[in-house]
Every structure is written in C-alpha cells, then in structure tokens.
Amino acid sequence: MFALYAFLVAVALTVLSYIFVKTFQLENYRLDRYLKKAAKLDFAFGRKTPLVFTKRIKRLFFCIFLLNFCVFLLFFGLIPLFWVNFALAALALIFLPLWVTLGFAVASPVENFIKKIYIKKAQKKLLRLKTKVVAITGSYGKTSTKNILQQILNEEFACTASPKSYNTPMGVCKTILENLKETDDFLILEFGARRKGDIEELAKLAPVDFGIITPIGNCHLETFGSLQTLEDTKYELCENTKELVIFNGKSSQTRKLYDRFARKKYLVCQENSFAFAKDVTSSNCGSTFTLVLDGTEVFCNTKLLGRANIDNIVVAAAMAYLLGESCFSIQRGIEKLKPTPHRLELIKGFVNVLDDSYNSNLDGFKQALEVLSGFEGRKIVVSPGLVELGHSQYEANLTVGQEVARVADVFLIMNETNKKSLTDGAAGGTCKIMYASTRDEQKKILKEILKAGDCVLFENDLPDNLK
Image (cartoon, rainbow, N blue to C red; front, side, top):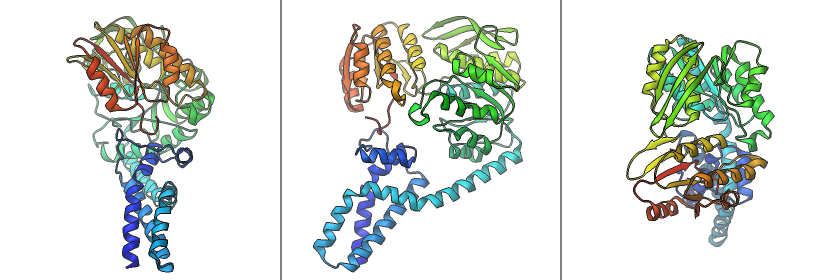
C-alpha cells in the first residue's frame, strides 16, 4: 500500500513539475540561469512555446519521478500516518523547482555519456566521408547566410546544411548523423555560442575547412559579459579553420578580427574588397545589384528583401566562388533564392506581412523598418524589442522606439521586458502606441485595427522565459 501511495504522489509531482522543466529547457539546460529564474519565481507559464519532449527531457522526467518515488516510499514507510504523509506531499509542492535541479544532477552522468557517444559517431562518419566543412559564426546573419550559400552551391555541387538554427554540439551531431549524405561535397554548419570556448568545442567536433564570420554586435552580452569576450569567442573559428576565412566587412568588430587573422583570408561587402555589391536598387519585391567578384562584374536580381540580405548574398557568393563555382552558376543561384522563414519573409494577402520574428539586433531592426517604409498603406510594427544586451539594453530599445516612430503608424509593443524604453523612444513621434502581454491580446488588437492594404512588420519574438 505504501508503494502505491508513493507511486501516485510521485506521478502527480512529476506532472506538476512540467512548468519548471519547461523553464529549464528554455534556459538551454543552463543550471545557473534556471536557478536565477527560480530565485525570482520567474517560470515559463503560458502556452506560446510548448515543452519539446526530446529524449533528454523524457530522461529528466524519469529521474524526477524516480527521486519522488524513492523519497516518499521511505517517508510513508517510516511514518505511517495519513495526515503526516499528506502534509509532506503538500510541502513537496513548494520544493518542486529544486526537484528539477536534483533530477538534472542524477541525469547528468548519463547525458554526458550519451553526448560523447553521439560526438564520436558523428566524428567517425565525417572522417569516413571526407566531406569539406564550411562553418559560419557571428552575432547575426548566420542562418540566412548558411541557407543562401546552400542554395547557391547546389547549382553545381551537392551539399547539406544544418536545418533551422541547429548550432549546438548536439545540433551539429544530429545534422551529421541524420542529414549528411555519402554524395555531399560540402557540409555547411552554423556555429552558435553563448560563452567562451563554445566555438572551439564545435570546431573540434566538426573540423572546419572554410570559415565565415558574419557581422558581430552586442548580442548575448548577458552571457558573454563584454564585447571583447564575444569577439574572442568568434575568433575561435579563425583559429580552428584549416583553409581560409571570409569576413563580412560591414561590421567594425568583424573587420577587427580580419586584421587580427594572419592566415589566408578575404574581406567582403566593402567597396573595392574581394567581393561587394554596387548599383543596388531595392523595392518591396526584391533587389537588383551588380556583384563584383574578384574583379568580375555580374548583374544579379533577387526576391530577398533588405540590404542585409544583399550582404549575406555577397558573402555566400564569395565563398561559392572560392570553392570553385562559376560566376554563371552563382548568378543563377542568386536569382532562385528563397527567403529564410521568419527572417524578413514577405507574406502577401489581405494585408502584407513582413515576418522578421527571428531577428534580434539593432541593425537588422533598422533595415526591416527601411523595407517597411517602401510599402503603401498603413505601417504597423509588432515587437517586444531587443533582449540580452546587458547594460546597453535600455539605450538600444530607446533607439528602436525612435526608429519605429519615424516609420510606423501603429506600434504594438509586446510583453513587459522593454515596455518602458520602447515607449520612451516612440513617445516623441506621431505613431499610435498600443500594448499586448500575450499572443491572444495581440491577435485581438490586430483583428480590430487591420484594414486591407496595411503592412505589418513582426520584429523579433520572445520565448516564455522572458515577460
């Protein structure tokens, strides 16, 4: 009977720990970040970003259940009094956030063992196939550059790219084991980082032949601590690349890394550099430009929107050229390019929608607003602003508010995180400022105000662990 009671209590507490496990997952399994949230009682309530039941999460739930079952089996056996047992079960509710920590501690040795097995399997496959690896890192533009490069290279070569934003060790392993084919000439990987050493770890997992450094800015400063640490972390790709590295010269921080790197390198996106765009004309249907590639001029047109995408195209075209692709194939690949979902993606309909919800930097926000300004009809911006900027977050979002007020007719501010700074910035303009705390509120407001011909820009999105 005691075992049955312990089992039922353990099941109930494990189910109730859902919200805490979800918070832990949203914090990328970072125990320090999760404990900070727990100390503030700041947990991921809501249904916007549901818990993803990966194998790792299932193992964590099992460990939480096992801990609960063992503890209550012991208590119920030692103290066979119903009211005491009921009180202990009720008291356990208060400590549910800590059960996640204990479950993580129990599961960690198993997770580390599984991680090592996956890494060894991925490395063994990569070594056997001898596929050349192109790795991309930077603060922003990584995913778009990766997708553009894959589409251009596919004109002459066979290549695989990591899906979506798979840029962690397990994401890279998953790409190699599940997506990389025997016939692939190139594997294009996105290397993400939140702390020093992350890029080096990824480069050791998948040895890099060719590297790309996209623009570097003040993203994720809360985890890096300083811009210098961020730069040093991105430079780890240069130190671990065997053949050559391409640098997007539009970023001053990226140019610093170019100057710092002593081996084979190429600077692009600046006038008279190895590759750059000139004679650019843009509209809300795309852009035309002349691509200057190692002295050769190629007229190009693309459906992709925004100047940042032209720079991403230049970077990808330069790499494709250095990998042996002809200018004709590069031109043809550029003409066929499809937008990366949620990155300045135009969706036409009753109203025009600019979906830039995966963007999270000031320059990208400004360029999205520039694209928005080219549309007719009312212009509506929906955004929670920018996050993870450390001490500069208020000033950055103040600027965002000012820029939005310059272009938009309506500014719908999402969530509480940057509400004050965005309002302070936009208050000096003539745009109407509105607020929504949830997706449901956002939908209701938009349903009430939207008219045919309006254009709505969705800029950035916040997970449930940010309010």
